[in-house]
Length: 288
Image 1: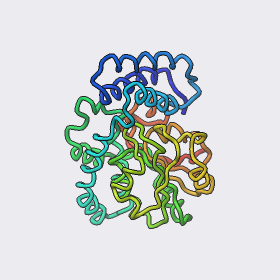
Image 2: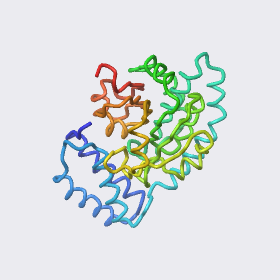
Image 3: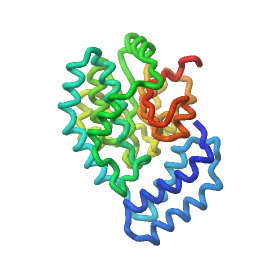
Image 4: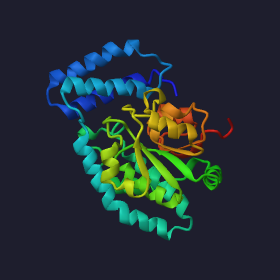
């Protein structure tokens, strides 16, 4: 997905929010915005938004001397999600269609997105309530038949993660896939995206092989990924891609990718062909 003009104000918003989390020093916060303003004119609209996101958060780290501004918040939501794990597992166990329910739970976990929510001013007032609301939604795009057909024809799935905390909800889905899963996390701290530390804290290594993409962007920019990840990616016959950042970077790839996400950005919703707030299970190759 290309970058739209509407994305540019969001670049500044995210930079300011991250800077405010990283430091109370207003002068340092202003320097972050000044540097973003210097870089934006050089940024091509043909690039994906996560490519700019990668630059923005590098600026935040450099100008605030904070290697991982969101660490404390990530840990908070990892712990909160783990507390919900038994209850969500029970939902799957009692469901008429456990796989369907597990997919919905995985997508519901996609609300834990600090790039969209203003975590500096409180974030979620009630995560469990927001999750329950998402679980009650109908799908706007639901390529479930294609998903099940693909699942029947593979022994291994490449599953590209999105956010910390959300890892727990991914784990619930992975436990229902009954396939070998390669679970891919980010190559370094970026917003609240899941890293190896988050995956291990949430015990993802007990149900999947966890690897790093090698990319420290809020998405999967293939030219910045490790050879280990690219080897799995090239061979993958079925890929599950979580969240908006992965959609932004992989939506134009001619691969058998299933995008699982909640549309929290109007620009992404328009690009997908749904409405803001919709939940989506989209087959990247359908109709293409």
